[in-house]
Length: 294
Image (cartoon, rainbow, N blue to C red; front, top):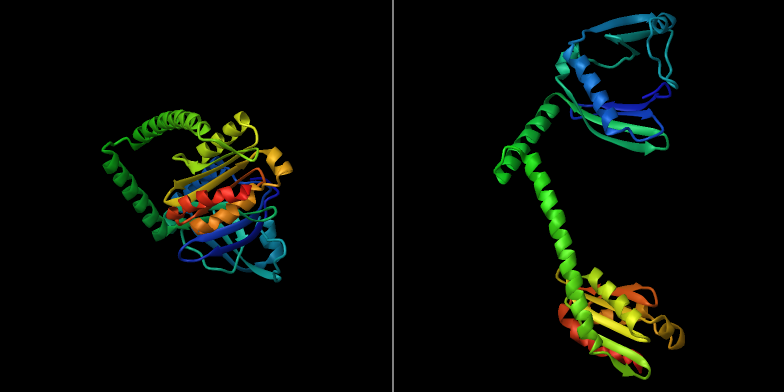
């Protein structure tokens, strides 16, 4: 990763390990793979542990031992070697790297500014991980009824993208038809073109519909009631002229009407939404909406 890297912390237990180190950016997937592969090559090389007990500190450093910045060492130290790796350490070690079996990096993240953390698993935990992955792949093959799940998933993604486009087009056509119908229902009350009604569209389509109606009808106050994922929704659009001249506030309107659907919401003065759990309260909310014009 570069000569700037220094160890900043570590933990080793029977379930996983973590290693903190100085680095200025996220470690890429390709870099993680290279790290993992190099470690596993050392594991498969069955490197024997070579232990040097009570050797002078200067001698250990001359042999190439890594001393961690900030750590305190005595005049005589213990040095551990595995192949080219030499480190001053008083902890326990496997006698041979082959005992580790394999290492799998499970995560990479930031723990502080300029400090990254790698977490990994080895031994029996790694075996369990690979067995679980193998079983998952078998289940996917069974569900897809195909031995090439990647090919099938790519095909499903392609079909899903096309279906989304078709759904978007249908929603646009549905909204367009709804707009023509709604324009015929607008009534003028004291100089305000007013409409409060239920609309069978998703929230995004209702928002688009509201602004399209607003661009075609001056002085519009539009309030819609709808359902989305089992919840009641209120949407309010207020022409900016009405905001300025009649002090109408879409946020205040949906917050006030929200009590009828046992919910709340808010937004800007010219557009706001509210959600609630009482779908049956939509009719009462729309009925009460006209009071804002009085």
